[in-house]
Image 1 (spheres, rainbow, N blue to C red):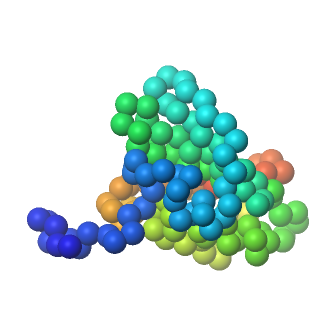
Image 2: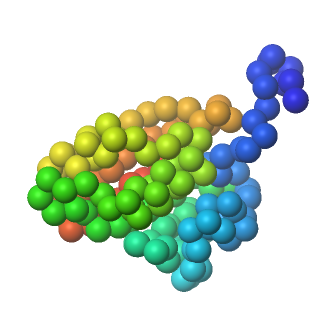
Image 3: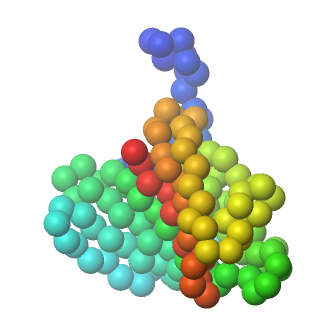
Length: 148
């Protein structure tokens, strides 16, 4: 489909800023998300899911139901190790589903560089501007996508 701007519409829109059901998303179908809980606070609904390795949190604006933040938490590899193949598969699928780009070796390297909080800004194929960050200052790695 051609848009008025001349851009081509995405056949597989990303989940960031969408109103799509996370439970029914391809990501959750492939990764076997287990719904854990919902909490509402200050106009935001927070949904938590269990994954094969770790958890995923999704935040929606209550007024619009749009997803504006998603985070995967998993164990941080010890020493100079890399994420396991299972974690890499989950992270790759998570990023592709929410922002349309996969997890790369350079992202992993930057993410695992000690206690630094790595941050990258980009745009989804749908045109949504996002911030992608990784925090490995504890025994857990938080990979967070936020619409900006």
